[in-house]
Picture 1 (tube, rainbow, N blue to C red):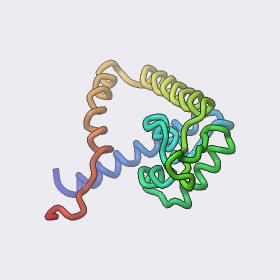
Picture 2: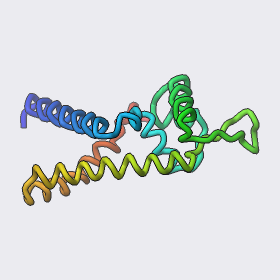
Picture 3: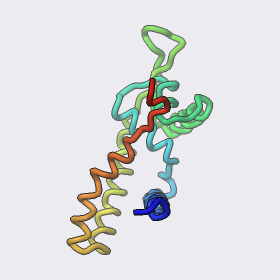
Length: 152
C-alpha cells in the first residue's frame, strides 16, 4: 500500500466510524440524548465508582471548566451525585446516581438493539463474521497512545 492509499483508507475509516457514532446518537430518544462526553463521563463513573472532577477531566482530555459544565448538566438531570471527600472537605467525589446507572444501561441497550437490527438487516453471514473479527484491531486503535518522547 502506498502512503496515499493509507491516508485514503484512514480517511474512509474515520468517516464511517464518525457516521456510525452520529447514527447511534440519533437513534436515542430526543429527551435522552447526551453528548459523547457526557455519556463517556457516565461510563467512567460506572467503571471507577467515584472520581474527582479533575480526574474525569484528565481522562476525557478536556479542561476542568468544560468538565464542570458536563457535571452540572448531569447533576441537573439527576444522573450523578456529589459527595464531599472524607479526607479533604474541599474535594468533591462524583458518582453515578441510581437514575444515572439506569439511564446508562438504557442507552446501551437501545443502541445495542439498533446495531443488532442493522447488522441482521444489512449484512450477510460472511460480513457479520468479518465485523466480529474487526473488533480486536479496532480496540487496539482506540487504545493506541503515541509516545511524545520515545527516547526518554
